[in-house]
Image (cartoon, rainbow, N blue to C red; front, top):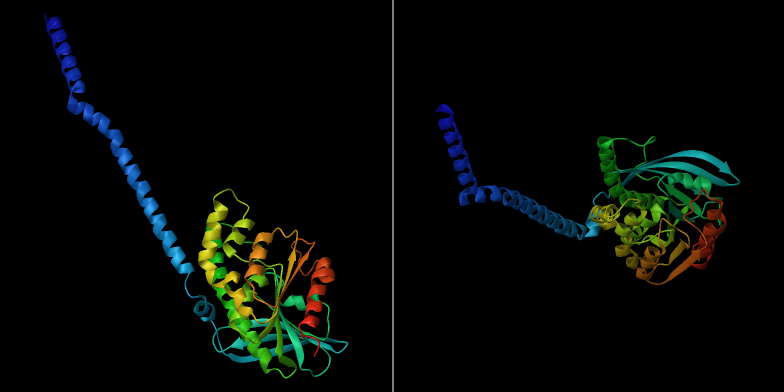
Length: 344
């Protein structure tokens, strides 16, 4: 009898469980679990999209801010300069200069002067990231033109930092130093203008590689620059960064956009037209993988007259490459003669 009653209770329990399972409320509860997750997922995707859109709009507005006040924010008046004589050969003198502003700005430069009292024309050279003032030692004297090489406000550490934290700190230092480049060049012009052995009406700015990206802004802001030579340069900084980032899609495109936002005031395309009517020389390499032809041509097209464009059968050579001296430098010296830098 007990077994029969036990069987009946178990049967009743199973029937009750089955009825509950099949009831509309239970069905809705079980089915409602998945839509709830989908709802949260849709909300997360929507929120992410909104945040990205806001970030994009904010970045675009930030990139479109007036460039000149940003570039001139670190401008200082000349306070003085201390000089160190290095050598004198064949009448040519080389000296190191520590040029100081009336604030925290300090520019380290190297000046090579031709024989005689002058006043001499001068080429202010801004080269690759590691060249700096050493360019004076790497370029042979030409046409009795003084040469001033400038150090950048930042130099890469050796060895390179590893890890996320050190690289983030390094990135901040680089970004801060970028805004000192233009004020440093303007302070160097101030100092040159005070020297009796320099002809302040024949101060030429020559930018190569990295320097070619800064030179248009410097010349646009200061009419004391009588002429500009741009060697192996290009325009459109965002596209340039993307072209040089060897990474899978969409990392180069994202990196290019971020670079555009961060350094938009330096964009060469926005400054190159303001150099006219002062003469500009472009020297570009047919095989330059770092400065793609399309981006170089975009810069050439934006430039006003007078301008000269020379395409050479070269890659991205630097001042330590023999081809730089036999081909690129030859174009620059000949251009000096044509535009009156050396012919007075």
